[in-house]
Image (cartoon, rainbow, N blue to C red; front, side, top):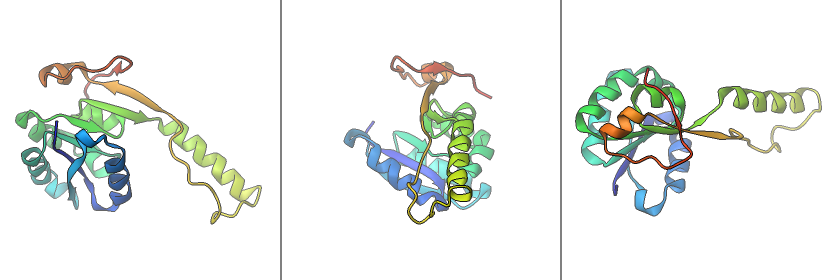
Length: 159
């Protein structure tokens, strides 16, 4: 794969920027396409499919609520989607390094405790992210797209 697109709503520009930095040079994102709401998801997905070998969709509420529309376009175009979390992967993706919302909430609770009980200054707090990721893939979609999934990924089923 030489061309990838990152698709999400515009307010996730930091997530998109970070994902571009983490991709290996051989998979460097060439296009960032955003949708403003559910009304233009199919058109933006089609543009991403036309411009790319693969698509990455970070954790995004609009994408999560529109996975069927995204999948309809991407599966027709035979383009793999790599998702930022399990729900999007189940709806339209082939694989994910999924976050645990429980773990993320727990970490957030610890941060809130530090602020409310210990008086930690939020201006000086360390920014934290999900403490761990789970490698997951959808075997049927991977097979359909001719993708060999590396060892260590757990199978999940489509919605």
